[in-house]
Length: 71
Image (tube, rainbow, N blue to C red):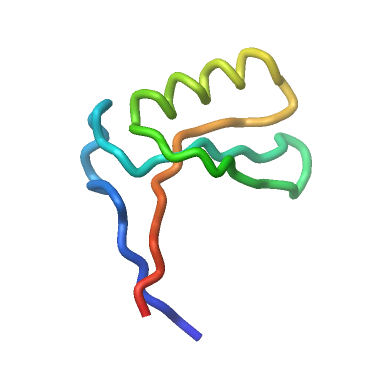
């Protein structure tokens, strides 16, 4: 069943102060992926992803926009 999702931030412009982001990750050589539940703004999520990437070379981290289901 298809659904409709609403972005919490603008999907085209990523300003550091925009709220509605979290940090997501995936293994470089595997199929496991997940995300952290902490909501933060884009600048904080980008900085946190860079810090985690520097510590852990087996995973890739990025800021991910939170999307809310709207049925």
